Image 1 (cartoon, rainbow, N blue to C red):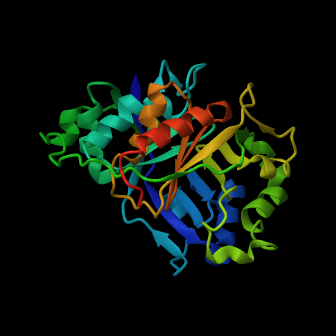
Image 2 (image 1 turned 90 degrees about the vertical axis):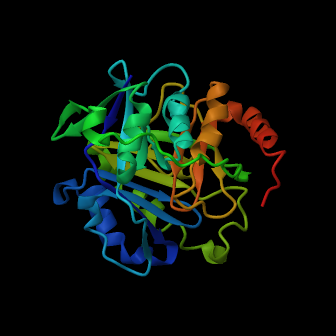
Image 3 (image 1 turned 180 degrees about the horizontal axis):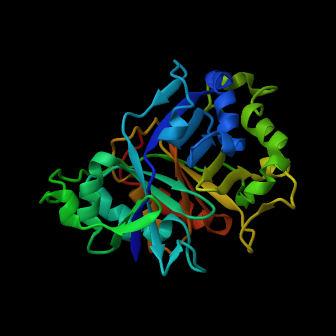
Length: 334
């Protein structure tokens, strides 16, 4: 298998709910006006707490400093696993499940923190730029590693990058087993031809920017009622669009423009974390993806500024729930 270090330098940011009004202008530009920005990697995810925006340095220039904008201090690099010339696509288990054992678990053992972004097309594993040499030395036996430079894939020689650096000397700590929440929403993972984006512009603006207006006065406590959870994710990466939304939001869009896999399956969410997770703890993705991989259960995985979210097929939610409850029997839940 091949591992590609993509030619993007990314920032991970968070916009507060009540500060969104200060950023609608740049966000509309980044989503709809591709000819007016050089941004090639953009992802916006709404959760009950905030909006997580992951974007490259060109896109980041569009966001003005504000008390409503939090910025994680690191530069992040996206990695992508390609097997048989195709980015993660097969009739078997899809998503993060395919890379749990080959990428995520080894990096967790080497105390490398990852930020996951699954899309309709593929899975991006974001690692801090400063950890790249450890990532390469950890994964070089399993993968042919390439770095994209100006559109070309250049083989990476480990000696070029590591300068003799051995694997991370930190001892991998036993990760905290975080509580999980399983809301009742059914979710869809969908795509859209970028040329038809103008056709859904008003609906997308409504869902992204105005969905909280009429009835969300009880906003002060986002975790108060999580039977159903507010979650909507839009990504525009290298010209490909990915959308994750629940079935209620999906009904607002024209059915003939959004497309999903031929099976059209619905997904259920596992939300990881009782308190905001932060960015330094390692092994959070692994503690969810590893048991799913052992059971050959597909999963999309989307990290956000505060919490992590795994999406599993609806028909597997009972077995996934049992599995996670069993995993959490030993430690006390904080």
